[in-house]
Image (cartoon, rainbow over all chains, first blue to last red; front, top):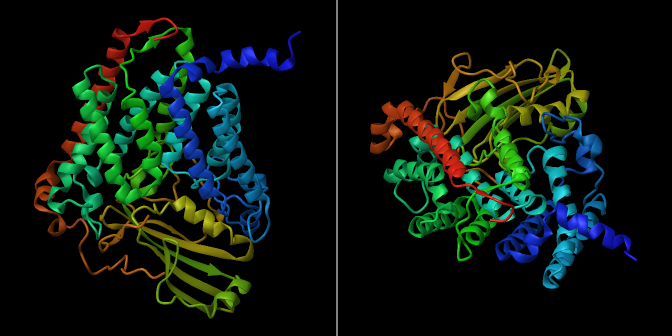
Length: 451
Length: 64
């Protein structure tokens, strides 16, 4: 008599193409590489306050613009307030350890089943619970893991998607930041290891390789294929000087596994079973599109910028001024806490603070500066940060001056009351202005690069 | 932690001021729009080529 487990086993194996996991060494290695990146992700998130109840209570939750009430779903507490977040991540640690055991025992169905909750949790956090917790490397990870877990012809689609991600990433570089290389020439530290005079050559070479060279990774002509492999391996090692271990940790293992010693040329499959794979490819392309349909320069307004591959599109500097009226409690609290002389919280530096009274109303005037290329000065992020304090205040005036890759500081936000503003995720928001309406206020000093 | 620079200095024109670009950037700057158009054209051409190549080289059947 067949047990329930037996009855589930066969449909499960067929549905998720488990046979490919059992028989294909490339796919097996990729399984390990994706597991490794889950470990890296969760080791970062375990101590993060981003999605905790405390963050929700403080009004500082940063939800995606398409689901701005996400804090209602927060349920974890992290130290020093509680143990639930670290308990959850240690449970996930146990799952990861169990996956390693299943891989060692070559029980690929069990390993697959155990990876599903890791994947679902990460998708939930990245796309539902928090707007900025993930970077493009997390998109890489989720897309490749989706191919690994859910679709047939895993090896072919893993290779295709990996190359497609390079190809899509190139489109964010079609701008002076990369075509002239102002991203790097306006950094205090310039381009790592090479003279600044060569910057445009390097930046345009990277664009060329992402547009054309990446496809050679899929070539049947081994000389071309190996040349592309060496270039991208060197590129990821080099870019790690700027982005540290996280991005190379998703890109390099996948690159070496898919296109290294195990590489074999694979022709595009065509059958009913590939429909799921092509749907995933289509979804990845769709995910890249929202910024293209929003009016304005995404680098300046940041509208729609977190959809698709937005890595390293430009370097940013900004000055944010808030004038908060009628918040007695905060005015008392910060009255004696002056900017000293530039107090930085992470990449944000409090450049000045003034507390005074205007017709009997307490006013707190603060200027924050962000001089880190990586921080993107997103008006939506600043809006949400401010709106967390609206309940205690009469109103909060906001200006945001933004410079992209050493260009002029444009005053793209200048509003009397940020508390009444709303933000549309998929359309241009009128309260964010662009040149020529946005005035030029000055030019920046060379940017710091901090990661 | 203290930052070492001032972000904004209204009276100082640097950044992308031509005086601050290197020689190659100055030479390319007038043609930047052309360069951007070139990359978009190459990107679209590559996309088209890849689709046609994949279609011509497809193999029927469930396992390659």
